Image 1 (spheres, helix red, strand yellow):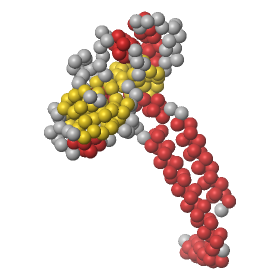
Image 2 (image 1 turned 180 degrees about the vertical axis):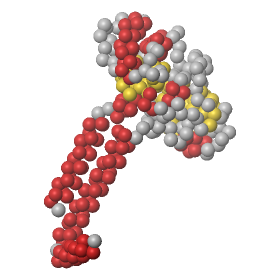
Image 3 (image 1 turned 45 degrees about the vertical axis):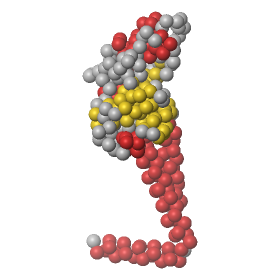
Image 4 (image 1 turned 180 degrees about the horizontal axis):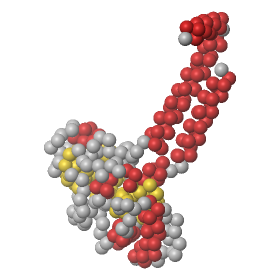
Length: 288
């Protein structure tokens, strides 16, 4: 053991003499290694955040997404017929004008089916989430606030529940505030508003193709089973349209995990970036 330490100290002294004699080279080596390790640390954090970290929903591995955009009528057709998952829907984000007291501000809003927040499984910080029937005609003048909007526009007032706020000229009652960590469908979403489901309003019910569909798998069922069921339901849903639809409608529809749908094409790019960073570190280590 003594011989080992003597040899180690001798090698250490020799290495220090080499470094002191070639200080410029030593600085280049240290900077190269530091840069390579820093890049790899950043890339690993990116891989974990995008590909490995679970979504911030309870049992997020049970959440699925249906590709494409659909009118509200088609969404309800699938939602009422499917058994492999409970399907809910939301619209693409939009900018709304909010009037709070005498001031106006802009915020990102989303129209959602009544069961969306329940299916995602995140309870509110204050008040309640939407319940079945909140998206019915004349019952949908409600809104749920994000945590950030609640703080910035209402000062974190815990008595905000039940107050009315004007959004795009419509007075809506505040029924809930979501937790700070809740982010769906985007990190900027500040308002969730019930999407009116009214078959009598054919223009709204079958007109805009603006609903994206997500769902939670039934117990014991898989993404593959949900995909197969959606495919079998396409002819029945197509027949519900009040105007002719081509036989090829929705043939490309896919059911995937919600994580995969959110990552999309980014997955391959992140993996490629991480592999490139590892290669840089390997080359730097070999040359040094």
